[in-house]
Image 1 (cartoon, rainbow, N blue to C red):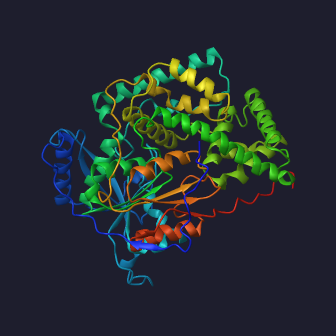
Image 2 (cartoon, rainbow, N blue to C red; image 1 turned 90 degrees about the vertical axis):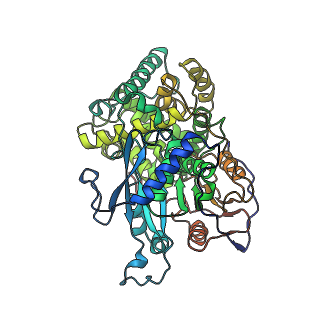
Length: 532
């Protein structure tokens, strides 16, 4: 799945200055109704601005964040029709503080960050400026986040009663029985039906193309003639759509751990690609645990670690840990480890402790808490927003037959994540209403200012072939690869090499002269475990 050959390194990192992009323009003659509606909504937002003040109490945001709202049309083809409000958060650039030693750093406007999803809220995003790696960027930019449409408090979606959303312990078979499949199919049909019953015809307007249009209205409301944007994970697809729809509105864009934007892969094919990539990432985790057998006593080979995991899964099927952790929760905890190396020592420690008679670390890390109503409501809303966007973005195979055939074949070589991913996305097989046709994202020379693409070579959530596809489609983009690592989202992390390229681009508008790579971060250190 991942490309084995990297493009040449830039050596001494020769850098070139970017050229300025032209100012935003009105839609051309013959533009679509949605393009005209976006221009109308953006003009209104530019005139209204954003009245920043205290953030909504329900969001439990710190006082350093200030929030406001931006009004957008539910349907951009009808800009005078029903309106919804998006909540935006901001932390002002620290160069504005006269007591800050960096106050002489020139301001560069707003940097809007979308952390991924879909279904992920970005209101906490500006707090990254508190981290040491982000402080130079935070000195220059107002850091801005927002909750996309569908994500609370921005016209939140719901597909079922949150009290029933948090699952208790359940199986996680790699070869599901016919009875188990029937159960999950019925659940997926009921979930899709609930989404439509709770939202009605408005549900069709929650998709990535409208999220990109919303982003342009947010830009206008912030008073920014051109957008400076950083997207992570599926936030990069939002950025790619924005670049396709509004290339003249772009100032700088960072695509961190990008999704494959090829129209034929959006949705179902990307799902299969990620399931296969996670098998390699699961092996990375097992190899690391095996190298630290002196600490965890889970086996000195990946195969032995797999057997220890399987033993734990079988025990949990008979008696869930703490009444909350079954095989599905165990798998979910280790799927998280596939996203970020930082989880590895904790998951290994919890698995080792459980097999030696102490279930508490595993319960702490993987247990569900349905009694926490606020957390359940937040999780249900996030899943509803994710499902709506993904199902609306593209055509998915209808019914279960194609999913069953493809996943049965794939699970023979990639059993770890395949079926878990199927159950998470199966409501799309029973989705009602029109689907969007994914646009052919592609920019020619000079259509878009140079952009920066960041990727970890072994990232399972953003398989490297898809990274290269985005890179090819955005003319003038430069790719920085973190070699031999797989953490999802590398900008502003512990890799000084990556951060140097990110800062040079955002602060000075400079990019490597050609694609380059970084040696990668060191692997995590083991935490003391029961066997140490």
